[in-house]
Amino acid sequence: MLVNRDGPAIQHGTRSYARSWIRDGSLTSSALLRLGETGAVRDFLRWFAPNQYANGKVPCCVDHRGADPVPEHDSHGELIYLITEFYRYTGDRAFADSLWPHVVAAA
Image (tube, rainbow, N blue to C red; front, top):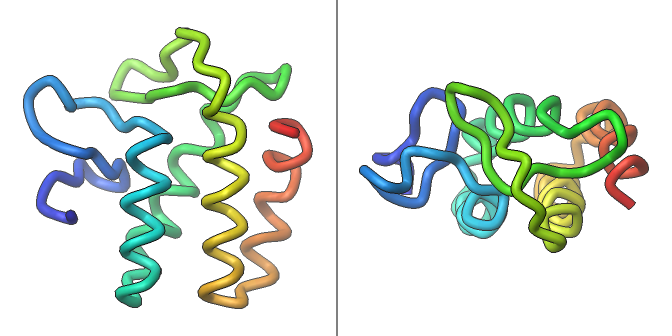
């Protein structure tokens, strides 16, 4: 799962998956958390969450050019899910609190 990472960007595969999708990133991150790989997930959240639009919209994918504006209406829940999973597995309240504005905006 980590072999396809591009820095903090968790990517599902190579070539046409040279973007980081919140869908794949949240599911892969959930598995990584279960394996104790919390650092990679923390890095991914720190990198992905700031790409959220000012109106709360969560982009479906992000790459070196920035956020993709394509509307995918499940992205909001996937970001909220991942932040919740990170807190559930790590108990890191300070990090969860730092991401709370992204949760509120997405909701």
